[in-house]
Amino acid sequence: MQVSRSLFDEVMVPNYAPSAVIPVKGLGSKVWDQTGREFIDFAGGIAVNCLGHCHPALVSALKDQADKLWHLSNVMTNEPALILAQKLVNATFAEKVYFANSGAEANEAALKLARRWAKNEVGEHKTQIIAFKQGFHGRTFFTVTVGGQPAYSDGFGPKPADIVHAEYNNLASLEALISDNTCAVMLEPLQGEGGIISPTVEFIQGVAALCKKHNALMIFDEVQSGVGRTGELYAYMGLGVVPDILTTAKALGGGFPIGAMLTTTAIAKHLVVGTHGSTYGGNPLACAVGIAAFDTVNTPEVLNGVKHREQLFRDGLNAINAKYDVFSEIRGQGLLIGAALNDKYQGKARDFMLAAADEGLMMLVAGYSVLRMTPSLVIPEADIAEGLKRFEKAVAKMVQA
Image (cartoon, rainbow, N blue to C red; front, side):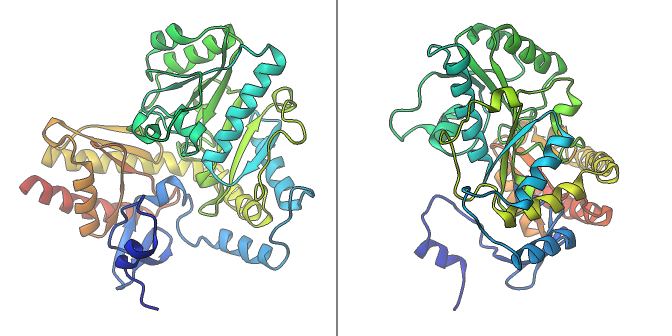
């Protein structure tokens, strides 16, 4: 069967506009398309491929589990799910884990749990959820409404109620909205889709204090920032605060679909039998790969390596900027990096991304004016250097255009 980009337009729902490039093979931080052309991967499947492509530990875990057990309903549990849950509990604040298939599903569970906790602990009136403008929490109707980007949630009819949005890094805007009727405040401890915005220490600690004052749960969406992405196992660990609920996905499976919600026993007890569920949540294949990914990332060598690689990216991007003057700042933490375009190039992030692809480099955007890089946490230094060299060629062409 002949497979080409035109087939997408014939058989797929048109909610995506994929590039003409169709990758067919990946290894480490490199990808090859149908013609055999090589790309350096600075995109990492949008912060998913935390160990690159076809990492031997993940391939081995998947093959081993494939010969044992693929699926059970949640009428029964399974060994890989219990082992991964124990590892997550041991490594974080959490005491209880719920497995799902994606970040959106983990966030859906977190929000439902927060509402149920508030109803049971306080009363029917405590339903307000506060999130932040430019935030992103998934594409289910509940999570996309909580996400602070109306363009994604408008146009589908009446939205879930009692959800409001404050401004990120603006504590006063949160203080103006929060009350004893607030059941939860949900935020990314480093905004991803919204432009790679780091929180100030004062802001994040102020959010925690306001939640405590008003008996509201603090939910950290660490779908993009978690599993080593910032150089900490989870970003909260470097911020001096501990959430009540944390969601994780993307890198948790290194490319195999899995998500999880982490919380305490006192909060978790409100999701009693029958209140929530997932057919594939805790799938043995996903959890077996998750164990391998988690164990590989959760080492001082890999986590410290993330911080070292961050500096290589910063130095390289700053050197490019010194030549071409295209960025206003380099943002982010660890290997969640944003290069914000300056006033001369506002709105042209996608053009830069496409120019990079022409030079054999895969990267991302975060909005219209920020280039985003979320490569493998173990990307070889030689691939960073080569990728930056290709990016410089793309920047030079954009500047000359």
